[in-house]
Image (cartoon, rainbow, N blue to C red; front, top):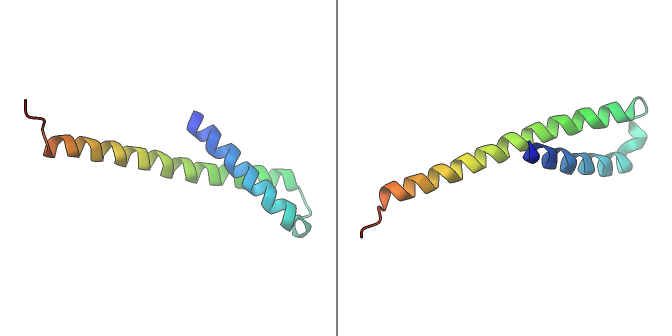
Length: 71
């Protein structure tokens, strides 16, 4: 959940900066649009972030299986 909040806030800041420069094109319900886009981006970022963590864990397990420690 903490990772999701971090991704959400990061995406929120990026969207705010984008809206600051491109806000003239969007005239209706700007905050609803910002929150919606931020939510979509944060879900995508969180999914990829979690996937990367799972891949790293699998790589470590595979490395342990391929190179067992010999005492």
